Image (cartoon, rainbow, N blue to C red; front, side, top):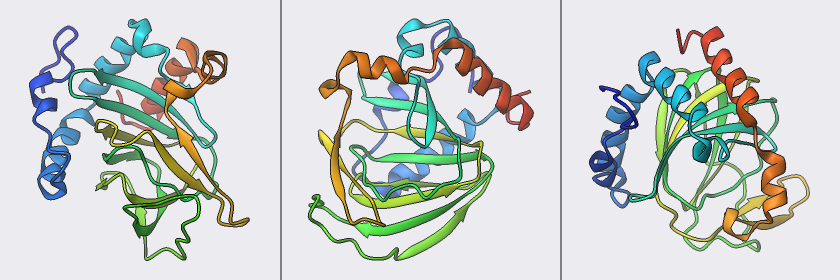
Length: 219
C-alpha cells in the first residue's frame, strides 16, 4: 500500500467493504489488514494522528484498553483503530454496535465466544462460552455485531481493528460473576466532560507508538 499525504487508505476501497456478507468481508479485511499491519503504514498512521487534532481527540483510555483512532472515514463509516490491552483481566461478555475485523500485532489473548444473539437484551441469559481460542500475532477474525464475546489479554497486547458503520445505537455488557447486564451507547449520548477525561493526548499516543517499536511492530 502506498502512503501519500492524507490518503492512508483509498476511500473507494473502504466504500467497497461488504459488511453484510462475512465470507466476502473476511477476505477483504484479511488483505487490507496485511497492508495496514506493516511498519511503513503504521508509522505513517501514527505521524498523521499526532498531526491531526480531529483524530487525536478520538484516542482514549477505556476500562481495559487504550485505543488510538488511526483512520475515521466519515463517508463509509469505517474506522481503523489500534488497541492496547493494559491489564490481564477477564473482559466482560459483550456484543458490539458494529461488525469488525481484527489482527493481533503483538502479545496474545484468550478469546471466549458465546454465540450469536440477534435480539440481545439486558435480560438475555448467554450461558458458557461455546468456543475458546488463543489469538496470537498474525491471527485475526471477523465478528458480526450480534456475536457475544470476551477476551483475557496479556498486558500490552496490541491489535489492529477495522470496524464498520454502526448497525445500532447501543450494545450490551455483562458481568459474568454477578449476572448484571447493562446497555452502553456511543459518544453521541455522553457528556463532553466525561469524554474529555478519557482522552489519551499526544504524550500517551506517542508512548503507544514507542511500545510498538519495542515490540518490533514498528521500526
